[in-house]
Length: 333
Ligand code: ATP
Ligand code: LTN
Image (cartoon, rainbow, N blue to C red; front, side):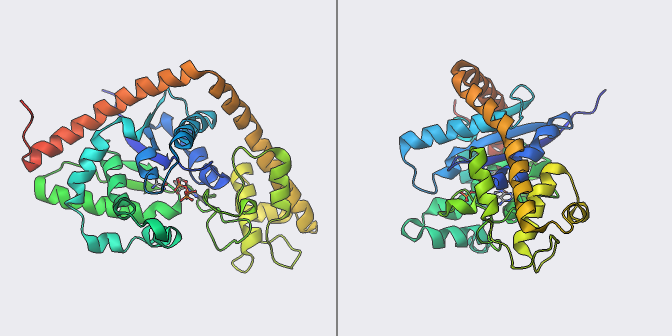
C-alpha cells in the first residue's frame, strides 16, 4: 500500500496587505509542498481579531488574502485553503488547550511583548492567548510540519510543549509538529530600518514592498532603501541594509551571496538596487494579473471556499472528538 502523505499546516493572519516578507518567507515556499505533503492553509481571521478590525474592510482583507494565496500559486484543488472562523473546532480546541497552558509560558512570548507595546490601548486577553489558538490550529490537523518565517519559531515551540504535555497525560493524541524554515528569505527586514522585520503593519510605507505595489513603486522603494555609505555589494553583519537586499534578490533568483557579490563587483549600489527592484517587479507582475482575474470570478472562489471549509471541518472534528473523549467531556445526546 502506498504510504500516506505527511500533513502540513500553515496560515497567515488576515490583516493588511501581504508584503514580500510574507511572500518570500512563507507563501512562495508553500507552493511546491503539495506534491510531498497533504497541505492545509488557513485564512487566520480569528487571530486578526486580536487587533481591532473595521468590519467591512476586514471582510475584504480576508477574501483578498484567500485570492492572494491562490494567485501566488497555491492550487485550491491540491491544497485545503479555508477560513479558520468557518471551522468551529479551532475555538473549541483553543479553550481546552488554554487549560493546559501556563501563564509563565505565555509571559515569555516575544511577539506578545512587541504587540502589547505597539497597541497599548488594547492589550486584550486574545493577544495574550494568541499562541494557544495557533497551537489549536496546528494540532487539530495532526500536522507533521509547519512552514513559517523565523519570527514564528517561538510559537511553534510552545505548541509542541502543549501537545507533549497533553500526550503525557492522555496518551498519543497529538502529532508533535516540526517547524519548516525556508532558507533564503526566512527573515526579510524593513527597507528603512534593516534591524527590524519587514511587517505589513509598519506605518512607514517605504519600509515595505507590498505584493500589490506597482512596478514604479517597487523600484522607487528599492532605490530608497537604507544602506551604509560604502559602495561594495558584500554580504555581512556590518552591512544589514545591503545584506537584506541581497536576501531578497537571492531568494527570487536562486543566486547565492557569493554569486551576487561577483555579479555586482565594481558596479555600485545604484545599479544593484535597480536590479533588485526590477527582479521583484518581474516576480510580482504575473501574480498581480492572476489576482485581478480571480477577484473577477466570484463563483470560482466561493466554490473553493465551500469545498475546502467542509474538508477542513471534517479533519478537525475527528481530532476534537478524540480530545473531548480523552478528557471526559460527554457527547450531546
Ligand atoms: P503583522 O505585521 O501584522 O504582525 P506580519 O507581516 O508579521 O504581520 P503574519 O501574518 O504575522 O505577518 O505572518 C505571516 C507569515 O509570514 C508567517 O509565516 C511569518 O513568519 C511570515 N513573515 C512575516 N514577515 C516576514 C518577514 N519579514 N520575513 C520573512 N517572513 C515573514
Ligand atoms: N501566527 C501566525 C499565523 C498563524 C499560523 C497558525 C501559522 C496562525 N495560526 C498556524 C502557522 C500555523 C503568523 O504568521 N503570524
